[in-house]
Image (cartoon, rainbow, N blue to C red):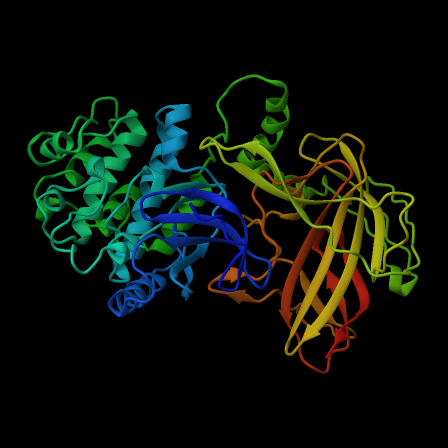
Length: 518
């Protein structure tokens, strides 16, 4: 067994997320510090020209899938003797682990799951791709809705010698034609959708479990067992599980019927699913000392709309000062701000460390990037701006925080902003949810740079592959007492701009920050 690598291609490995028959999955960071999932495939040596050609052909097809309710493929590559695929990192448990620990889903949560997975299949099929191995462990439950992963991977890992002789897929969710060795089609994915919904709503696969030959026999010959499944969803699931692929609805027809409208687009469906989605608890309902803290974070994730309303009303208030201009801050309606300034003397060391927190249902741990706050005996560190203020966390506690603008550096046409928040409390945790300002995305897409002296629209962080090139976090992310959380964002800024006002949303504006570098 080879040790886990430190780097794969240009991606820095953080930790292993899991492994299965097709390969090993790692949490990693790309060049812009964005978290990504890197899957290293087990089969197909890079020296095999036929594998290389098939790998690139199939992986490039997967890259064309729109990101609606999927974890999009961001990159593919070869590193020495291994092939790897990079996808967006989805922070959340898989459906299988949630059903195993929490039991079947009901009501609106099940309906949102059904619509979300159907949306993903519609996007996958529109790109001319067939998933081939849709199953509960390939559906991740994020804070904003279900996300389907590993589409097209099964075909990539098949060898040329065995492609026609070996069936691909997971027996409990395979269609009869797959079990008989016939080609995969979009209808096989629809059959798998039916099997997954039966499992999610009743807590068991529709054709049972047991030795593979017995399961496959029931898939081909027996009627599915759907008792216990929500009656409103049961007819559509039964139709999806029809033995005859021609009688199954398409993924688009599933979507239309679930949303009650004609020609529902994946974009519209994704918004509907996100609005109706309630994230599942991330651990079993066992009362213990740690559960109390986790319940607070879970409550914040489950009541995002209410938090957004509080933000709009000014209940969660940040009042920064503006150090470069010697202008005192405007006091907020309910918050008193104490401002202290520091004299920069030495560069700030990089003390970033990944600290595991509460366990996930699958036994892995959620990573939280915290750094120790500087001790009182440590020398001052060089910063462009800093402020001391207070905020209110999800539990209602007033938390003292320090904000630091660490750097604003140009490289070519791009400018990188780095800053941090330190939780100065001795006991209260700081919820990163307060930075969202009513948006559904947990990243820094809303912050902006305004060229000094300009009255125009702010420049927001750039996007690559449809995602913000900036810090991202889960709905449960937090900064522990005495810890620091670092942030970054990359902007396209004209070469003639030498200073910029930084708009950190609820943290306010920091004017006249110089841009260094060339």
